[in-house]
Image (cartoon, rainbow, N blue to C red; front, side, top):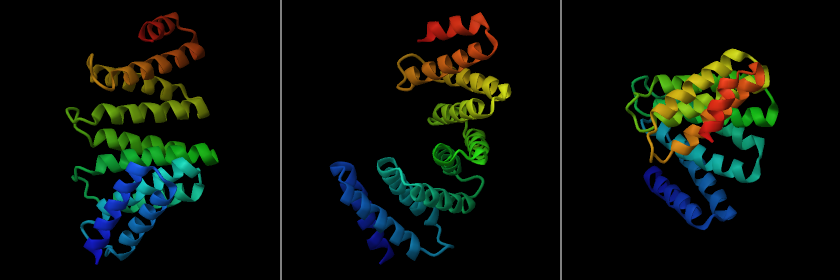
Length: 212
């Protein structure tokens, strides 16, 4: 039954991606939850199944902006992280996802702990990812964004300096023609502009202007 239900849930996800209908999304969420519920806690596939469930919940959150979907996503992603060995290739991806989920919850609740935890998770994602990995620059972007979020909320200049350092690394990893090049340059320009606004260094403003 479990394998059959998992195939049905995967088909439901594809159907929603093609139709973008609310009823198909609701069905995908329901099916993935049922797969999670019937999968043994010791099952090797549980973390991968949770990934799919959280993806469906996240899609529903983006549509409906209901906090409970975020709460459920975070709780389930934590289970997936806890069940993932330290040397597993998917652990970095799960920490990166958790960083984004926590950031979304902070936007909803303004809880500063979520900001701190989001930065910590994003840093772990970067630390676990080899620099030659295809997603390394993307995870640096997540870290930079979470550091900038915390700077904007808490005002610690260390976060802003760290965000600029990571933005520079990200730009260095995305050569001209890379699909994320524009995003990387924009991220660096934004962080430099923020620091110019804080300390008034003309060099930051000039560099930010050249990047845009």
